[in-house]
Image 1 (cartoon, rainbow, N blue to C red):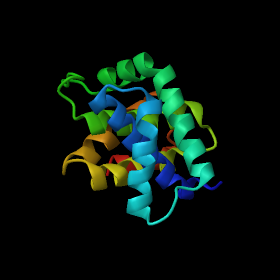
Image 2: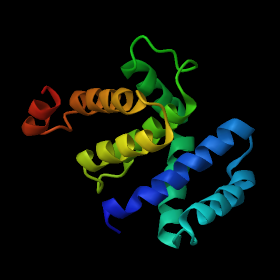
Image 3: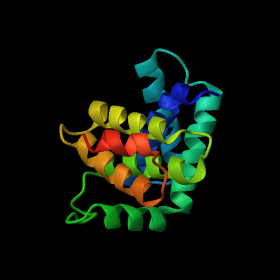
Image 4: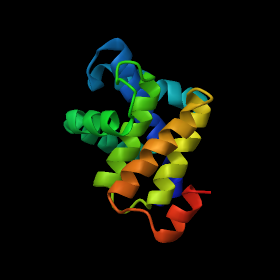
Length: 154
């Protein structure tokens, strides 16, 4: 499965995590509603491999929630996690999960996808906020090539 085909899986994961956060319900109580919503939006069923990838992201995020929250809080200087938009935290969690646990996904793709999803589903300023945190994380972890570091400074 190519990385560029995974956006629907990322959106599925985002919507499922958002539903769980808002309703305070476990994944099993939310998944059917999210799948129906996505079917209506896409005008077709979410392909099985997209469901599988999206669910793997959700599982990893649930497993590493405390660690992801710590990373986000540490990189979002001056921002309290409780003040941060829920959808932005979720998009960041998905991107950070891919950076840490999905080595087959290129760093640049993770950044582009997170920014595009934020542009569509969050506030006007969210894409810059998310991109800044991801850049700082990737830079600290040595994930950015020299030419990518030069581009980010322009």
